[in-house]
Image (cartoon, rainbow, N blue to C red; front, side):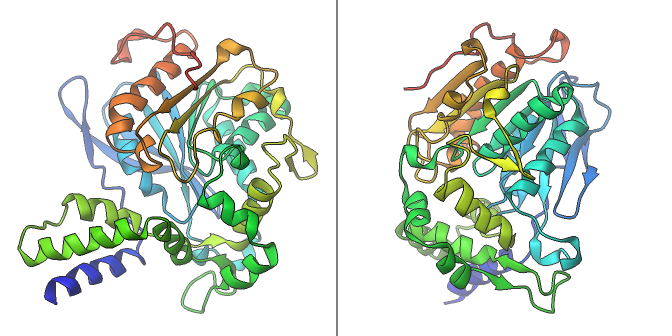
Length: 388
């Protein structure tokens, strides 16, 4: 009973607090430890562009913007992804805010606002940037790149890597897409949307609670999660568990959830999943249609997991067909056969297989790359379409 209480208490504690990044230093090529400072570059009401500044390190060739999902978890869900990129890249991340803490006076935030935020972040970093979008933001990142290609071509990033995102949700159905198809918008608004209480700065704001999203995620693999917690209770009872054992490392982050603005959640379901506006190249921002075919210079690579049960294979690679103005040698794709959704941006599949391919792709599409700050030789065939 004591072990059950300990595991349960830890789980509920994680649901109400934003985790720290916990990345204090890295070892550089010079063999010295370099301290990490997380600093905001662009601050906005609904999210910041943050930079992982590595003290005492020479400027890096690879400047990477990692677009974190706004799907119920904090950007720290990508902690291991950030740690794996820091030795080789200058890393920037979109750090989305918990909607319960944003005053109503800041207004709405929907998929169009999200797209404009991404365009502004890319603009702030300049054209010598390589963007990596993980899961949910993939379609809107593609739209933001197309927006810049037409409105501000000098601010376009050099490459765009889309990892496990629902570009075309109907390309290969999953429980997520089936849910979006069978539930009406009225039902969603009635059953999923709540109002922030007086305890938080965002009092009165309508949100989609992170706990509801967590419940949805866990219900997709309920038996696996139940077994994991049952086994952990046994380990605690036997004295075999530790503060940072594999179970706690995973669930400390997985259980940390944040609320999303109601209009963002509802417009995502309506416009991305139900109406498939990105898949049909019929997405607009502030009344202006965005044509993905206008992308003619940004190299684009898609990455999918063969066992992804959230964004199944076929959903993300659909982006390449929309890029009608992009030469074939600027398109690439890759499927990691045995990886699930989490594995394609964290874990062994990312570290050993996907990350090296992404770095090769970045190098192959960099302007006059300097070799001195590269840990691997520049790949000659990184822009290869390896889709099944």
